[in-house]
Image (cartoon, rainbow, N blue to C red; front, top):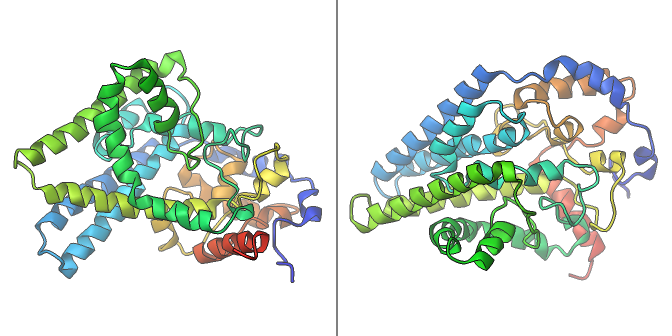
Length: 356
C-alpha cells in the first residue's frame, strides 16, 4: 500500500509550489540576530569544553563520567553545527564570530570553517543539488541497504582520517605539489561522497584557507606533542576521539534523515522535486534539537529559503504550515520523528533491492 504522504506522488510533484506567497510570509525573518548567535554559541562551546575537563576528572567508568561525556558531546556538537550558519551568512559579515568559532571550536576539533564553505553552498545550487557534482548527496534510497549501514560505520574512522589529514598530510603537502592537489581535492571537504573532488579554491579565499589549515595543524600537532611529553594525559586525546565519534554518529543520522536521496545523480531535479526530496522533522522541542541543532530539524524549509537564519526557521515553518493557501505540498516533507525518516529511507532501499 502506498504511503499517503510519500513525496514520490507524481501528482504532488507536478503541483506548482506557491513560492511567491511563501516568500512574502517570511520576508521579515531574513535578518540574523548577532546577539543570539553569540550567546547560543559561547554558552555551548564553554559548556562543552568545561564538561570535557570534568569528564577527564570524573572517576573512570562512573555514571558521572558518562554524564559529562554526553554533555560534552551534545554541547560541542551544537557549537560545531554553527559552521552551517557560517556557510550561509553573507560574505564579509560576522567576521569576529567566524574567528572566535574557529579558535574555540573549528581548530581544536579539526573542522575549520573552510572545510564546509563552498561545498555546502554548491549543495543548494539548483543545477547541482542531487547530481554527482553534489558532495553532500548520495542516492541511498535507490542504492543497496548496506551502503546506509556502511555510511554509519564510517564514524569510527572519520576522526582518525581528519587527524591524519591535518597533522600528517598538511605539512607533507607543502613539499609536494601533487600531494597538495590531492589533499585539496579529496580531503578538504565535509562531504558524504568519497568520490567528490573539490574544485580549485577561489583566489580570494586561498590565503585565509591556508591560514586555517596551518592553524589546525598547529592545534593537532601541539596536542600530540603535549601528550608525548606527559604534560597532558593521553586519555585526553582518547576522549577527543570518543567525542568526535559520537558527534559524527549524531550528524550522520541527521544527514540520513535530512533528504530522501532518491535521485541517482544523472539528472538535474526540478524545483518541486528538490524540495520534496528534503525533510522537515519538527519533532519534540526539547529532544529533536539535540540531534538536529541550530534549526536543522527544519531542513526542507531551509532548502526553500537557504538565507533564513537558524533562529527564524521554526517561525517560518509554523507560518507556512498553517497559513499557505495550499500547504499540501509544503507538508509533504514532514516526518514524525528521526526514526520515521530513517525507516522510510531504509524501506525504500530494501524495496529497490529486495534480495539483499
